Length: 275
Image 1 (cartoon, rainbow, N blue to C red):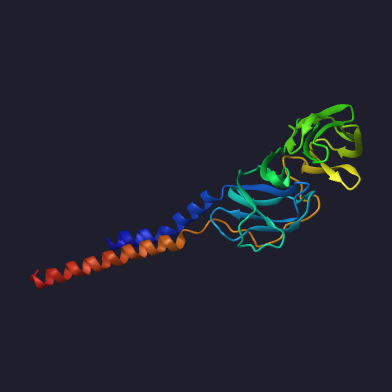
Image 2 (image 1 turned 60 degrees about the horizontal axis):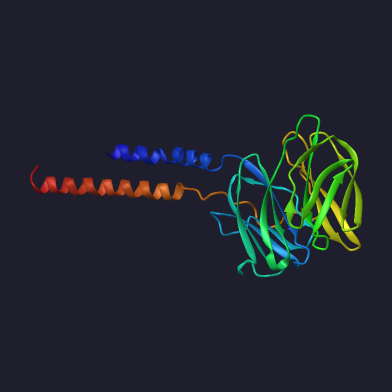
């Protein structure tokens, strides 16, 4: 029995390693964005579901800011938004959950008016049809609540409403003019799309009218880009799932002590009985 208990303890590291391997099955990517025009700057936090310490913190994120992608272990996370400068222990203005699958990328964006602010999770595409690029549009203009967006002669979105997102559309690569029109107002900009890349065009309220920023969701070969628009990530280092080793060792040690005590008690009874 003692040998069996010892074998159990010796087997704990292997069991713990198997647990750790199954708990982290790959890597995904996430970026965070503030796309609510009349909402003041916010602090954005990313938490793993098994840890109350923030993995990522973005401070004083203003409207129109989109972070670069950050790689994280696949798993379940929560995103919380607080007023800029608020205590990390304060109640979030809003929060949402996101499940990050290995090999996938996501954008979590604060969208809508301040009175109806929400966090929306967008599944970002990473691959394209051969020889083409993919483009979608996020409508984040509150002043022009319905817009039409075209890329050269290709219509990307027609009648796209505020705080909504179009589907990705395959287009031929090249340098093209982006045209956004709404209620007699037109804004144009230029974007270069390489074959195999994926882009998100974000329509914003600028100081002198509509503005468009281009985000690169993937730079080819199914991988997200290393960089991004505006700010970067800060905060604490990533925390993975808690290790089961201490608990397994304690359980195993307790079992061994119980077996040892039981054998000693049995031996004592045998001696007192003259056996």
